Image (cartoon, rainbow, N blue to C red; front, side, top):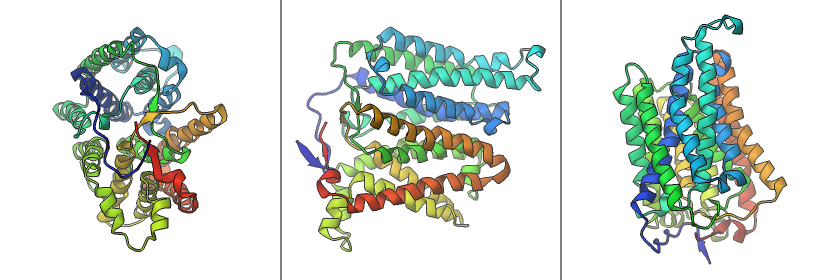
Length: 399
């Protein structure tokens, strides 16, 4: 049964357990803490390669490669617990290796050894994140009328960050929080052991990867000397809190907003679109891509308002992307799967590494160029969606 994309979500047929809600909170903590902690550690250890964002990019790439794979979907619950436990213990690895004297490695600074340990943690964490997302049985935004789970997760990460703001993230706090998440996620996985194996995701086009890629670039470049927030004069504490709010709180607000047909009311008031044009274009994918294109234009402004809109518009696109209904996805053909995964890797981790490498010379221009490129591709896709057949983009199958 098909439904219009801007119809409110159907109510859940059965209430979800407390473990399901706790698992979603843990899953969001896993995501948010990786963006913040790995980037902060890369900056603190001061590796010149890609300005320290290499750990974030490696975690991101491992997560994308693992997510949706057959081995992640069919892995036993104990495997999920092992990867989670190794990630929680690995948090101590960079700090321990920083003080290891290894002249045979011919490294200019012992901090480089710590960064190698950070890359190892990022790889473990990325595989774990991809497994957790693959084995999730329901979307956060289908668990109830209010998606409070990402808000609580953002509060936990912000509290951990704020409590150790003077010294950076304390390893014990991050390790303890990850260990708790591993216990919760393992318990949820065991509870779903007899559930049908199906990878749930959004029915979307390959270009839908542009939206999470843009949000990831903003999160990954958080520690590049205010490169992503140039002109706003924010402190490190303010940047972290705002980025957490844009990635976790804004999707919850947009999902609540969309439940009351606000999307339908908004677009029905756009009289300069013909009914046919609305039917062809104004779905969530098209609107998200349009916001990306507009956000890229705002990057080239010189005022603080332009800088704020350059961050807010892609974040709003991410929020709309998150709140899309999820359904059991069809098995894509290998060429299609390879193309989508390659596009996600290039527009996400690949572009982030380039931004990190180029920002040492180009400064804010590197981030502006990357986001401008994503905006340009998004604008081209908007034109494609505008001229396509109406039925292909106007409906989505209910979960």
